[in-house]
Length: 184
Ligand code: IMP
Image (cartoon, rainbow, N blue to C red; front, side, top):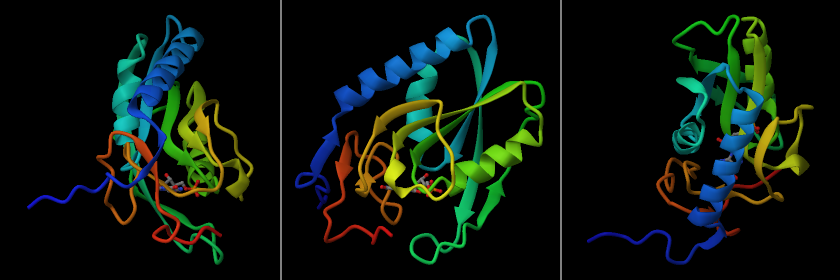
């Protein structure tokens, strides 16, 4: 017996809205990097689906790479500690790099990755995030390309999880507040 997991969930952004917005983001990246090459660096696992769609919306010559990070003590007791658990496969020195992330929340993850990647001296370093939750920011950081700005709500779907579930939902849905993790 299969379990229908998203029939009662409230949709925040439908797959059609996501598709249109990601296509616009791709066109913006195309304009800014016309005639150049770009390395898209996805942050596993949440950004995998966004990267797959964004890359197909980009016409400029692009390659992919992926990193993975783990963070500790998020929330009220945040220590801000972020650790790299999967490094880049290819050097980014002298390259145009776009970090591709699902959500910019406290900013600790992207703050950490930005400083780390800057040490490799890329030609340029930009951040593309599908969602931005500015009200939760701890670290001062802004993305160059933002899909949608959202309030302090916990979302799932289109790559984003709750305890590793729901990443496969085609729409971005709101986690019912009674089930959502506490937001600091
Ligand atoms: P930050 O370091 O707080 O900016 O964390 C960003 C990461 O937290 C994202 O890449 C997600 O993995 C996770 N995250 C933050 N908010 C949500 C949410 O609403 N749903 C699912 N994951 C989230």
